[in-house]
Image (cartoon, rainbow, N blue to C red; front, side, top):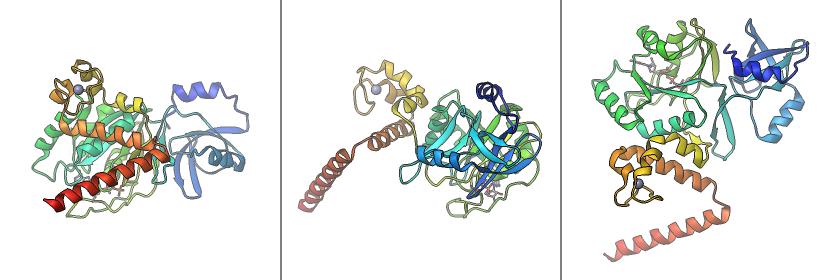
Length: 338
Ligand SMILES: Nc1nc2c(ncn2[C@@H]2O[C@H](COP(=O)(O)OP(=O)(O)OP(=O)(O)O)[C@@H](O)[C@H]2O)c(=O)[nH]1
Ligand SMILES: [Zn+2]
């Protein structure tokens, strides 16, 4: 189930008791938790004290977490420190762990109306700030005549080292295409919007129909949120894959250093800008604007802007709101006058 040197190292520092077992969280429903111990599945619950501890710290258990549980009662007594956790911010600003202990993320995007490179930059940042290898997987290559053109567009937009492929997620050939990217023992998560084809691809990789799939709306290719919980499955080739429900929004839980780390194509070029503090907006001799796709630069600016808004104090937010109101009042008055 993806047991690796990280888990081994963590375990050796923990001193587990004989009545405890190691398991991996493979599914979380509202009040139902499923573990796998390498042999079979186990329905488990958190020890109440551990539940309280999690609540107090604002943390949550995630699919992919490794835990110790009591063999007799199936109560989870300890969560092993994860090598990474992909988190987002909820609408109320709270951190939510999506999945844990991930090696590779397949960023699944349809070549239909789902195709949106700015959204992709968000997912990329999530991966690169957590040391997860991202791979862009464009689905529904069979549905559009523009597959080649959109692939080229994605290639121009993305940093050069990033893996990119297009598939028909329903076809067995997709398994062969993805094979070089998937190594036995690794944990791979599928991320993307609803209807992008994550469950379809999960079924193809598992070679059985485990995950339910659903048709998309014709006008905008939006899915119907068919998948409602994250779940981890073991593929015949030894890869663990986690299918996730489509995210409506992905508010990042990253700091400035993280965003810079995810945009090294920009930060490297920035060394050649004329001004050391160049913001790559309208400064002369800006090396970034000269070489980077404007859309990607927009993503970079937007993510930094979101971050500064998040870290603003309440007073700063009020001041900014007041400033916007004055500006928009002024421009309305000017429009009226002209
Ligand atoms: N033609 C074609 N159809 C696809 C492909 N991939 C997915 N589909 C179809 O797209 C629809 C949505 O696919 P799902 O796999 O349910 O999408 P999802 O990303 O899991 O969606 P949620 O579970 O709602 O997050 C289904 O009708 C699939 O059959 C593909 O590569 N080609
Ligand atoms: Zn610049």
